[in-house]
Image (tube, rainbow, N blue to C red; front, side, top):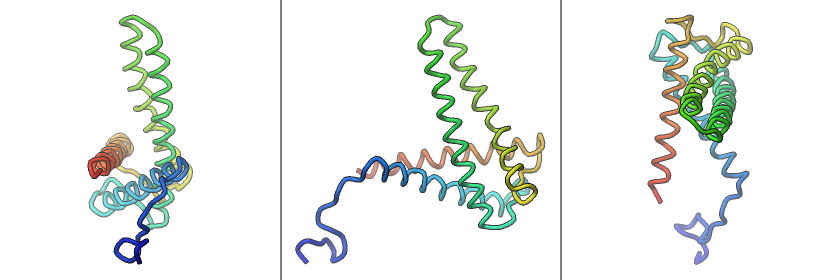
Length: 153
């Protein structure tokens, strides 16, 4: 038992690989998204998800689209940051805003295309505002949990 801590944990741990860390990051992101999506489904009139299975699949799709959006936003930001001048600085922020705002329409349409009426956002601007609220809560929660995890060191 000298090679185990508390009888079940190994005394030494191997550092995770980059692929393992990436898997854990997306896995945790999907779990956070599915919890938030189901909480909004249960406590809000603006979000409807027919079943838990569909909420899990919707969370996977939303996680993928959100990560693609963030990657595109960073690409646009780098493009304008590489150029000088006040107009380029403005374009960096405007481009980031445009990508982030337009992505919500893409996410809404993708959810509608894949799930039809079984997953829907209803309310102001044909469900766009409830979707934005859900996405913001997802992103803020993921960041808060990541910061808490880093704080635990």
